Amino acid sequence: MIKLVEFLALAGFFYWFFLYRPQKAKRVKEQARQDAELLAQKKQAQQAEQVEQIVSCNYCAIHLPISDAITHQTRYFCSLAHADSIDVKGWLGYAKSLPSPNHDPRPLESKIDTVVIHHISLPDGQFGGSSIEEFFTNQLREEDHPFFKEIAHLQVSAHFLIKRGGELCQFVSCLERAWHAGESVLLGRQRCNDFSIGIELEGTGDISFEQAQYLALAKLIGILQKQYSLRYIVGHSDISPGRKVDPGKTFDWRRIQELANISDEQLPFGIDNR
Image 1: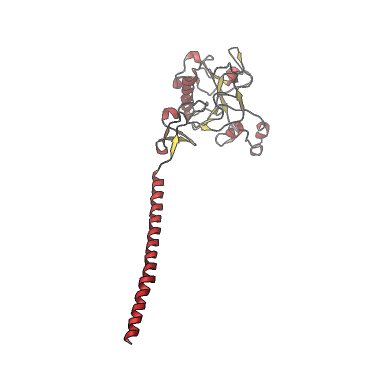
Image 2: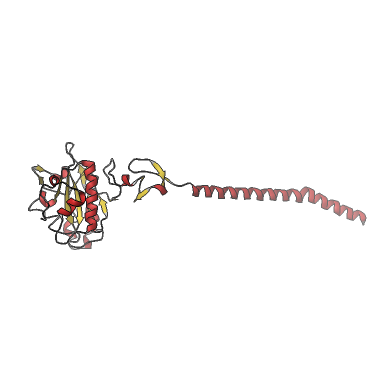
């Protein structure tokens, strides 16, 4: 009986020493390895969260953390000055970019020195919505309004559009020729598209424009003046008399002259409503 007890005890010892203990140690080691991997993954994830996205200024290409950047759509800027500037490709930083296919190169000898102010509303006399943007990007749907069937096929554009609330959209690079003026003559110079920037104001000639539009226009003219040393600021009706009436009799030339600090010489057709 004693020998049997001794045998069982010895067998138990051998099982514990040669089987159970190594297996337990192996399990403990494997658990420690898994815990270490999990901890490493957590640390890596935390570090990834702490590493902030780096972006580059659309104007000067300097790199900076996204939290320090000024964002417009998918474009980033390192300063307000750069967001308020026209880049080397002819795009204004803070303007909503809606590229239009309706443009072509300016003549090599042309120099940008004129702003042409227009008005537009689609449908006529109605404001808001996206019809103007769709029109300038060849996406206007004929079925949306009876009038659209008459114009949807046209290929026209402007460089900029200022909506009723002052929002600024850009369709064509300032370096390119937008198709906004058509047949036109300015002080003996024909084909005004060659040397001008076209700015559309959402509105009509019978309804007053909004203060937000005048402020946005004044800021834009100031930027263009700095970039291109403008000689003239005119209305579409000034360069296409008898054919066009915009910006119309409700456009306040005196107000925009004061807001944008425009000289009398830059307004060859005066400041009277017309």
